[in-house]
Image (cartoon, rainbow, N blue to C red; front, side):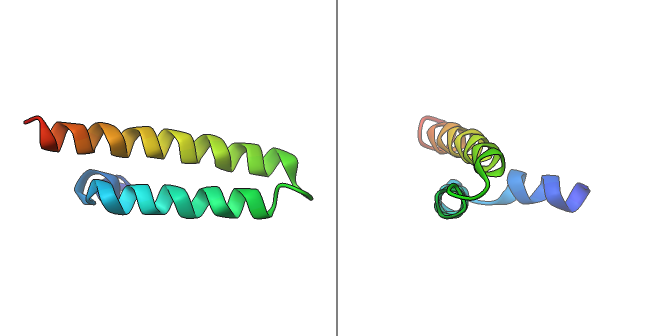
Amino acid sequence: MNKFLSFFKTTSPLILILVSVGIGILAKLIEIKFKNIAMGLQLITFILFIYALKRFGDKIFK
């Protein structure tokens, strides 16, 4: 669990945005057959994207 949390704390915001875009694309691909799983992945994508934007803003306006 510590490795998982340290990934989000130490990774650059650009990589987090790219990961969220990748998860979003995956969610759109499986949306036809698995709507519930796709909705969960889209929620994770949104949260990760907002977190990355927050970290990016903190880095710029520090």
